[in-house]
Length: 144
Image 1 (cartoon, rainbow, N blue to C red):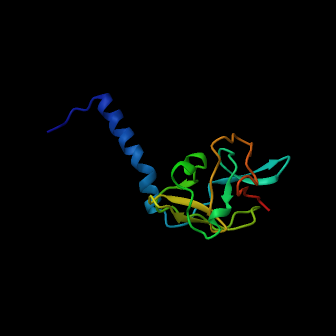
Image 2 (image 1 turned 90 degrees about the horizontal axis):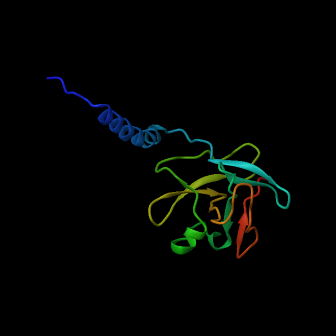
Image 3 (image 1 turned 60 degrees about the vertical axis):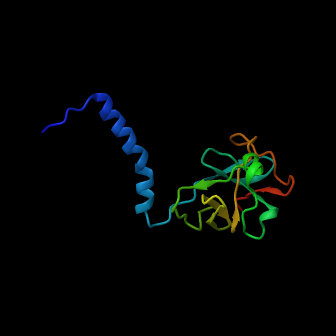
């Protein structure tokens, strides 16, 4: 018995399968991948580490114990840099001094770390603009 497929049903199936592809790929990938970061040059800060969308990365002095304390409303203002579950990152990246890794957040998500401290962006930063270096214990991650 042959089932008839409409173009709409085929499109829905393709979208549904595509949404599972990244999870399946991450689950199969045992080798660590490069951290999802780039370097950007700031006139006032030098070279800082940023997301691929060029949002500066920050660490918070309250997490020098290498545990996640930025949760709830604070994590809305300071969004954590999250990875896919099971994703491993290479510890070293050319041109960036320091070591990358991951930490599990209280809600079970996986967050990027730099020198064992969780890293965040700031909700009011825009691409290539770092507003909160040395503000309330938050510091931009420097490349060197």
